[in-house]
Image 1 (cartoon, rainbow over the protein chains, first blue to last red):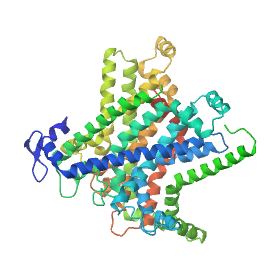
Image 2 (cartoon, rainbow over the protein chains, first blue to last red):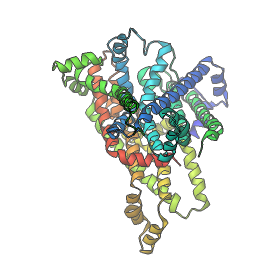
Image 3 (cartoon, chains in turn yellow, green):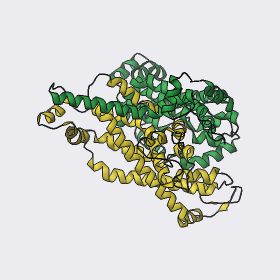
Image 4 (cartoon, rainbow over the protein chains, first blue to last red):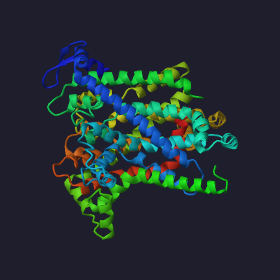
Length: 263
Length: 279
């Protein structure tokens, strides 16, 4: 409630409300090209992060469904990213992304790729941040996927295998449809999580380079608490936009994806 | 699955084992690099291993991490915040979920649940400015109370416990009531022990969230002495001379408590989380 009220206030230089201005803050926001840049960065980050987390999650979870010795231990190991905070992971990756001496550049130099500007090249930075976000989300994703795969009835898989279906076809045509409720749950929660992501970006790039990772939440933070500004009204207006975007995207997902889910 | 002993079966098995090894290595790679770097001062894995083999590893970086930020004080702050936030959240969500499921609320229960679920949808980033101004006007800015008080109740925890309570057998509840067990004793002696996975999940997830919080503690605290460990460690990266070794040492130290929590709570966590997800 206070957020809606704040978003319609004018502010002076010190961020003190100066009176009711209606939708002026929104009008100014929608007219600025920076704002639409922010929205497109947020969209790219969200899609990239959700797709990366799910694909890597599946790539990790599927082989672990087979009953080999030691999968229990491996399952526990894979869950570790879940415990590590985004801040800590961001810092570790920041060191890994160090130019030349960092692990990322050192390993790539063996295959002849030199000096990737992980956090300095505007075209690359957003992917560097997505990698961190996907890594942190991996533990939770794999945990839910494994639990879902465990719930797939053994005899259904056996029947498919008797019909001559290989591992990949069994996964694609039998297991994935059965676990589609879990996939849907993961897509919805991870989309919301990615749209709200702050820490990874703040720790790694602070929205830079050249605003390449300047998402909506970074925008809120910088408008309200950034150096030299305390435009609480503009920040609140952006907060409302974030809420509406999340509600909208979630509603669209329920409308179009829910029908493909086999309950 | 692979139960044939033919040659192709064995080759398939070997590729599978190889693939799993590669995947696991990739997943733990960042963590392993951070741990190695804590003792070697570099994230270059080859140089790192070389230094370890040569016996050149050192705990200097761990020591200097403590020197460069008041990590001990900040760790203590984090412990206090985590304990307070987890305890508050557990009490409020246990009572709320109890009222939703067993309270005589009738139609009202549905309305209440809807309200809880709607608040779950509102991202904290939306209300962050309003909450910040509220904290300031209460004079709580730069205190530990400011860090945990907005998280005293959690819609997510309430929902998780409600789902567990719903599947609680009614016969046990009726038998307990016939024996004259009061609601509080029923909660403590029957409900909590029998819904253990959900309760443990609420404890572990809210403790992890409290310990790992970043944006909110960053905003409502200012002096290094009242910051939490996460914000404190991140400030190690801000200084102009970036000392990778102590940065990584701080990162590893701040991650240890939650890693232990997840490993020990794993069994209950798997049950509790999947109960909530596969409605």
